[in-house]
Image (cartoon, rainbow, N blue to C red; front, side, top):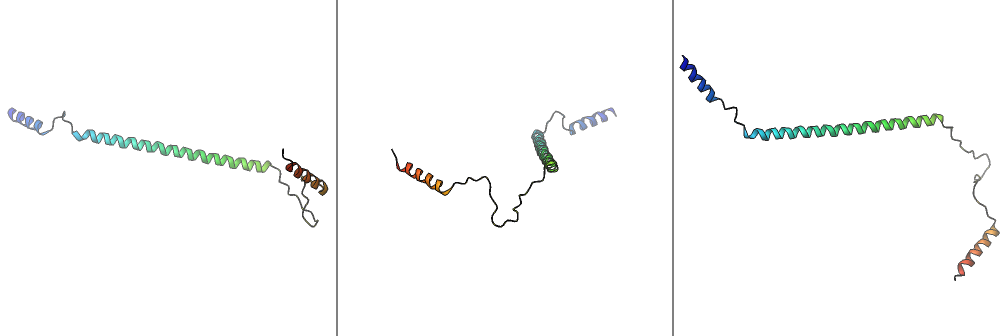
Length: 118
């Protein structure tokens, strides 16, 4: 009986590949899996960065709207000048008015100075 078990043990040991043998394609598969994992991690980081950027932009826009609303509540209402009931165009202020005789004299002096070239 003992030789029978011994023969069975030898047969079983020869049927299984030795644990020291390595599949030559295993290293390539492992490298490809590692590369895929790295790519997935980079995509995840990129998506997180985009999400953070969008969240910051939304927060900024919200704070700007709040500031606009706050300023609108505290700002005085803009006054619109009335044109009054007088007919014609409204008076425009802040423009210089020069009498015609002075304007003509000034124009004559400018023309005389431009003719007298040295």
